[in-house]
Structure formats: C-alpha cells, structure tokens
Length: 77
Image (tube, rainbow, N blue to C red; front, side, top):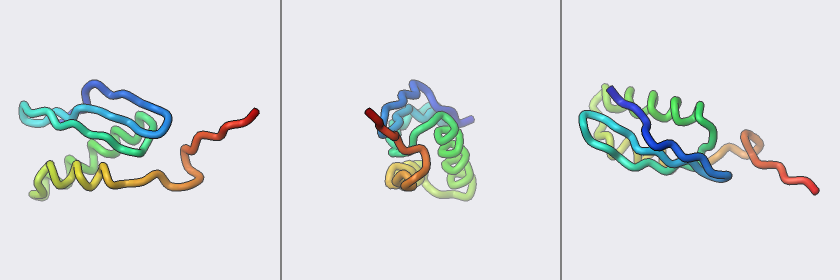
C-alpha cells in the first residue's frame, strides 16, 4: 500500500512523505491542493505497478509545474 504522510501545503508548493513497502520518500511538488496529492500517489502507483523505479516516478512528479491559470493565487488590494 502506498500513502502520503505529513502533508504540508504552502502557497506555492506541497510537501509530503510517501510511504511504500516500509520506506519513506520525501516529495516536494509545485502542485497545490490535497486532490493533487491523491493524483500524484495514483500516478506513482501506476508507474510502480508497471515496473518503473519509485525514485524515477517521484523525480518526474517533482518536475511538474503548475498550469498557468489553474489554482493560481490571486492577490488583490
């Protein structure tokens, strides 16, 4: 089973510890929102199931950038 622990959300990124087979992997992603953590775990799970190393999947997730116009912080005075 794969799960996220210690999820912390910031204005411009999210961090969590990915637990899998008794090991913990730190993850930092530019995607924000709890739903994205679920999506990232799903993507890593599928990649792992087809034989990709978990470290490679995490590296790919960490390289994603936020899509402009979606979930952007809008500041106003």
